[in-house]
Amino acid sequence: MNYFLFKEISHYSNYILKYKINYFKASLSSLYIIRSHKNYFNLLNRKSYNNNFLIKIFNRYFSSTNNYSKKNKISDFLFVSNFVNKSELKNKDRYFNQIIEQLKKENKEYNLIYRNLDVKNKNHKINKHNYYILNDKFKFFTDIYYLIKILNEIVKIIFYKSNKFKSKKKIIQNLFNFKNISSSLNNLNHVDNLMKLTKKLRPKKIFITYEGYPWERMLCKKIKNYDPKIKVFGYYFSVMPKYTNIPLIRLKNDFDPDFILTSSKFITELFKNKKFPKKNILNIGLNKTKVIPDNKKNNKNINCLILPESFDDEIKYLIDFAKKISDKKIAIKFILRLHPSIKDKIYIQNIKRYIGKKNITLSKNSFIDDIKKSHLAFYRGSSSIIEASSQNLIPIYISRLNELSVDVLYKLEKFKPQIKSVDDFLNFYNIYQKNNKCLNFYNKTKIINFCRSYYSKTDKKIISKIINMPVK
View 1 (cartoon, one colour):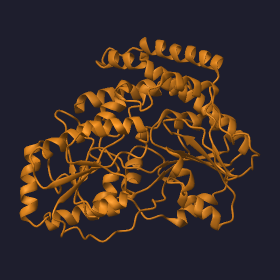
View 2 (tube, rainbow, N blue to C red):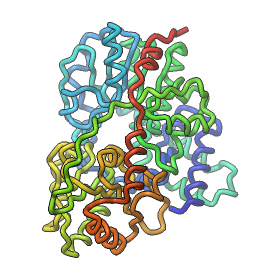
View 3 (spheres, helix red, strand yellow):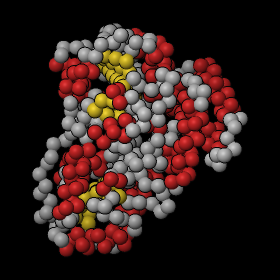
View 4 (cartoon, rainbow, N blue to C red):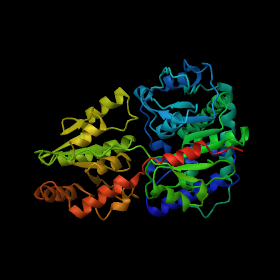
């Protein structure tokens, strides 16, 4: 996707979404162009890791969580978080732990709802009295009603006066595709189920992840319709690539959080520059991994960590690039670290077969252990490159021909290797070896300092201020 096409598609999608915005239009997933990657433009490009359609239908209408109806404990604070596999349920929450720890220090009660993003949609059990796994069961006749409302919104969009937009035809096609309609139905039911539990817990302050997905804006609207006094805090915790769209767009009409929480000064400034109320943008920071000693210089082989996003085409693109380098028989070993959301055993086995007998190992270690033994890191849009590069790994962005960059380290273009082909990498590799596995000192310092300062330290004072903020 080139720059002009991205700008036109995102601009027109934003226009459609904001023009006479209503709740059902806000549910249309394909209107949410999060960033420039093609998988955010066309839902058809997104591969599902659980392809059993019958299991999906059964889970949608008949499954429910064991602990959904346990006795509810009312609290002023509610967190809506995510987990992608059951092991995360035993650990501290990876998004809101710094706020939760401050609540504990101040002896304040809270509740937490987990959105179950496990691709297998298993019926997990959780024992903590104030933690809930969302019951995302749907109702058949409600779905029929919602389907009519969705189709009605799409039909209205067809008749918008927009001859000047060349991309209208493609956007309409995206709206009518099955994945968009299914995803939009999911958004509506998902928010219904979140609100059902929220009403039981009766919070005064609600903290949600804020990444640019429809359910976030829809939940804001539903909460304000239910009780305008409730304050909603949306936490943008991840990286922000150069061509980011919908997270930086204000929809207004109660579809935005009251407060935007950020993890860095860099991202805070981006929101302030996009007409969000400056006083309502608060940088609370992020819990970060401590710096680990760099003792890899004596390793004979150069280890390169591969850090793809969760998209199937992104995983295979980076594998293919590593395969081509492996064919050159140079002294480099690759470690593929899949996105933490990928736990489906069948898919992982398919990836192993796709790798074949090439010099690529599928990691079973912790991220820190992989970092400790690696020198380089291949990446594209993955936020994990920030932590990897902060620990002395050299970031190597593998670009694609005729694409708009998805590089999360675009600010460092002048200081890191520019790799567009296998030959580019081989030239870099030869120089890197001659320099005793070192990058230019000035460039390396720039990379490390940028990545170590990308996320701010947890600001306990701001968090305490948020906790004790009066609610009118």
